[in-house]
Length: 551
Image (tube, rainbow, N blue to C red; front, side, top):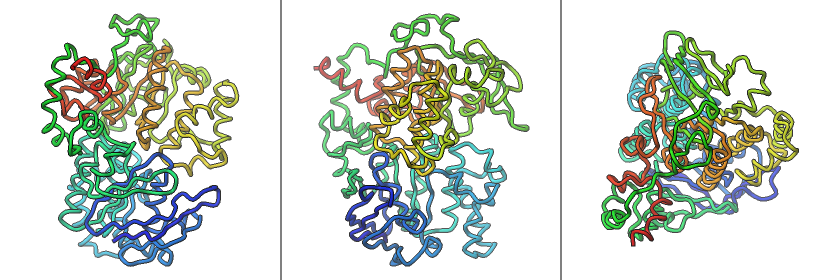
């Protein structure tokens, strides 16, 4: 179905090819998972399938790419629209209409399908992706995860033979991600759909993959079945890392497979008196300590009392009470549309509460001068490009240093820690999702705010970059910063969070130490916790540290 024959793709601004001498064949009816570090060429590989590269992006394509027998060098994207459906990293950028139902129908209208066919397919897709309750909603009012499901649905209604997805679950809560991936698997198995999917959150998707392609970062790739590729891959989900640590063979790809082999490991770990949490719970009154204690007013970075926020007749936050303290990392979790982004936005003054009060450092953020608020609270939004206004990466870094009153080069050094090698002359909006997020994070961190807020901070980040983010967040908390993450990434929460707050329908339904909240949750428990339950282990690193003690 998809053939790459000696394909080399080079962009004019690059000194080396992004892809070099690639040979790849993806048969009909397979789900092929594409992995690799941020900036390794995953998006380029995917965009070459529908001719977006090089027809729209520029650059030079040597070799041959064919899809369903059509050569992409002679068939532009519009000539492949009936065969290839594409969902990019930024759903909002691809929307054409204003309302969910209209967006689902637009692709079929472009192909000239009959109204009766369109109506039937819209209803099927609404049910398939759990969108029926959103059919009349304006797209601009949806959460990031809801937009992502609409984007996938708008492509599925055209019934393509090939579906290309770039980070399709990055903004989805665990339940929604499982629903989308299960739907894709049914389409692959029952209808012979061919799926090419790039994803960093391997723990979600690897068990569904028939084939795995790993981009090596030097323009090449290796391809094979997931078990073979993951046996030596530096990029692997926790279930595989735990299997490597325990010496399991074959390596498990799912929690179910791992639990079948985990009995001896659980028996060894029972010898450890107290299974450790992911990280110690800090004392808010004493940043960097690991003994719980009462909060003191001086350590309170932000406080919400009775906060209610409505959009029209819909209540987004309902009578929320929350205090955030110096030296702690708090994860805010909940399904898509629960109110997480609204909560973070209210703390930095993006939305005034309809009732209740918000205080940051004892003051109302609505009345603070921008430079003062920047030093007290910094927000990295879900759409990282909202923070990026300059024409080049270098210009963005220089403006950030000036706004933060930081020494020249501060933002660039932070960026290089997260995503090394980004060209200074590149336009921020031409970067990959992970690179844009890294740049936005560097911009916010340059101001060294006392309260750091991050909305889906691992969207588009590979595992090495995520590990770097974990180190930065831990160091920030140790220095007295209060860190708040609104995230669906349960593995990140297990690694870094001291405390978890769960929001449902605008209300806080749980607030406590990470291990207490996530262990009891089927949706929010990390893979290691599910594999080793009922023991309270959260991370592979914690298990590795305990094994010598276990004997």
